[in-house]
Length: 510
Image 1 (tube, rainbow, N blue to C red):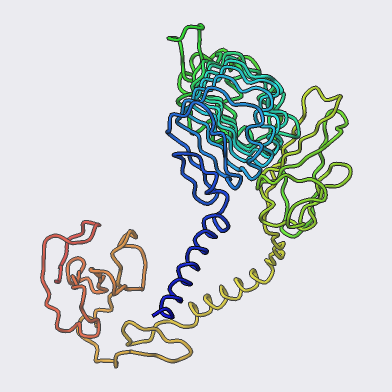
Image 2: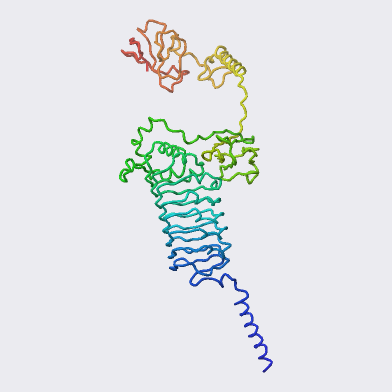
């Protein structure tokens, strides 16, 4: 019996040892550090909707997506993200944050998405966003922001989308958007603010890829002629941000909220603007035609020498030396853009951005490149051959007309080269043929006009007898399907009126 209990004891000891090993040695540290009531799953840490007033003291190092939204957080301490070296997305929306402060994001160098929407932020300081060099999307909408430091976004060199809608901004400066650090920016949402002061010259010098994603609707913009002309031009060019919200672009005519008028509907407000010449603030696109397979070179000619030049392709690719990802585009040392072999993907707008100390604004140039297939030059049309051919055909037709008359005694056919096809055999002359009549065709030609031809395709044929004993003209009313070869069986009928348009009286035969 003892030997039967020994394996069972060994099995229990083995199970106990494995259990303790799993509980301490094999469990991932992420599950070990998961805060109370939070959800930890792989690289996701969610503490949303727990009513937290402070950030949990311990956070798992493996977290790449941290969700702290829908809580009651009022402040964030500096360096609180130090343990999260892998963090890619941070959700802090729907909290009670009214300020950020320096050093809040100093350890978030890998962060790509930061959501601070639906908080109580009033001011964005110069160093509030330091440490976010890799940030691509920043959501700040639905706050109480009334002032932004001009250098608040200077360190965000990879930023692509910036949402500042539904705040209390009365002015916005675009100067910090001209630097090379903002060449990635594609979306800038300034809608539903209180913007009254806006620089039209700064708007005009923005690159086209940013104009396409610049949302200014639902703001009390001034009814300025220059702003009106600029928005009209953007609307005609089909820029998405203007076309999608055309009815929500309004301006205040008399600085009264009730005097808001729509830019693209109430043009009577801007009748005087059409009389005054519009300022040429926005440089026009340079239209270039390129053939498929040829080479092309674009120059970034600014008003002053630029220290640095950057290009943006039609696919929104940032072009620096040596060039594009596929190697088809090269940025040369002088700042020009060289395309060795033009392809279809090179069609679109190339944007050149130049910066320098002597440039008042960082200047942009746009090249609209159209690519088309090369077409061969058509050969010269030789009219001599066609003229000769036309003369030969005409001569043949004349000869046929002169020397190939209809067959005698034939019906509905003509003889060519002394051959007659489909003809009727000649028959004995009928009494009507002995009249030696002269036939006329019912046509616009008067019946008295000399003619020797009769048409079998008409309904009526006139026969003028050579004998005078019939008292007038003899007319033959012929049905449409009659046969001229059997005229002997036609009955004769006398009448007082003639079917002829001449009005002569005589014998009418039907």
